[in-house]
Amino acid sequence: MSHDELLDRITVDPSVCGGRPCIRGTRIDIAIILDGLAEGLTPEQIIDHYPQLTLDDLRGALAYAAELSKENIWKVAPAL
Image (cartoon, rainbow, N blue to C red; front, side, top):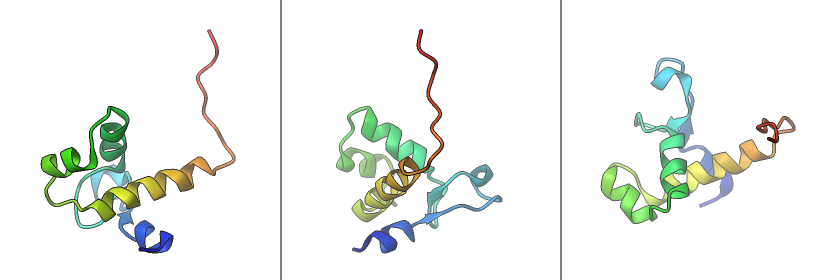
């Protein structure tokens, strides 16, 4: 699946989840998927929790996050 096809799996609609990016056709925030992966859940474990998701949906979430990381504005917590 191409990068653009993965990104097509993501939708941002002000009337769904307050406009946060979600997997198309669901109310599953991209942040939920990314948080799960960051906590060490496997893709299979995430899909077990959200059976309407596919591996391509998870890849789409990662592709979306990669696009966001290319932004020129970075929000970094101040050093302590």
